[in-house]
Length: 81
Image (tube, rainbow, N blue to C red):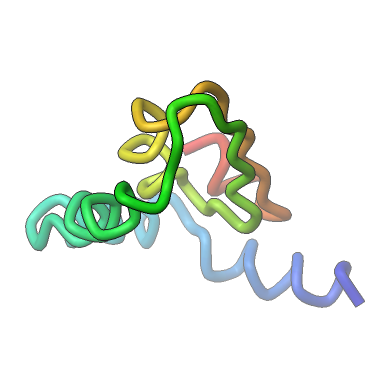
């Protein structure tokens, strides 16, 4: 099952599409605004797991809010970007 999703994700996660996602996220400040909404529920002593992190656009904003953060995704392309 994961193999099928991985094929779909690798087709979607081309370098061009990933760059577009980053540009839109930055322009709209979506992930930054989302992290501000999540922050009151976090504790600096926590370890957080971001499952399905994609490029880590949210992960980078959440990282300063917790002690440790682990980010995983099935898309190797998204992780590399």
